Length: 91
Image (cartoon, rainbow, N blue to C red):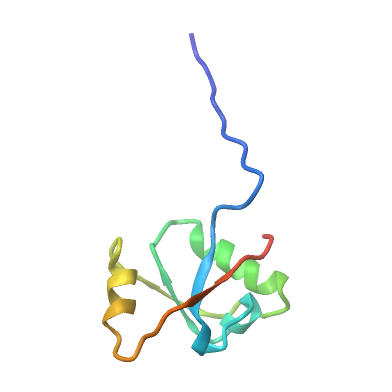
């Protein structure tokens, strides 16, 4: 017997996090910037579409780091201060 189980979420659980001091307050501003990725095979296309849907061209550089390496890198950068800004846009 086969069963299917699906979780239906009312909100998108994905987000792009930026430092407030970066000025990146909307996805379109990621054009020409570097995006730190987990390297999921579909992630680049989703980010590109988010940028385009916000009025950007979708041209950005993707840098895939090891799992949790993104957060370690952010915390090691000299002068990094929190809080961060979370960008949420419908894809």
